[in-house]
Image (cartoon, rainbow, N blue to C red; front, side):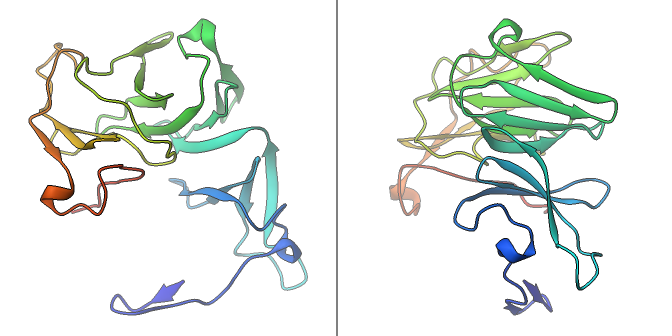
Length: 212
């Protein structure tokens, strides 16, 4: 899609002939800090190749697995969440996997994200929010949080002002910025946005914060 800031137009549809492994299941797109464009297509991690010659494939497959979500951390490593197979980290020095022995529940990893400080988080199952510590993941989900819907990709996040926005089946829960060293676990939502506030549905599937 290209545009002038006011209008957009569709300029290209990528298909198997361009190198995609399949055409009917794209989970997530991510542009990395070094400019690469990555996509989770079915169970494949793919990279778009905009500089490829006219007779070359425009997409290449980097890895195959039960991938569902992707995020880049502040060090440039890629984190991949899977369907009940834990998390995988592709660093510039190698490939590392994380499982139940590292604090990750035996459930789907539904999203990966970093906060403004560069800390890495995982959402898993219907409630869990896991933060990567020095050696393992710790569950920091608020006790007051309700269960999520079945969405995946861009679920919860910590906003630039420090507030937490958490998706649920009963609306969008907004938590205040945690005090230093106090954490999120014992906080209660300061606001719950629902259809009464103008949302189309109380079930929240995906959300993100823009650069403004």
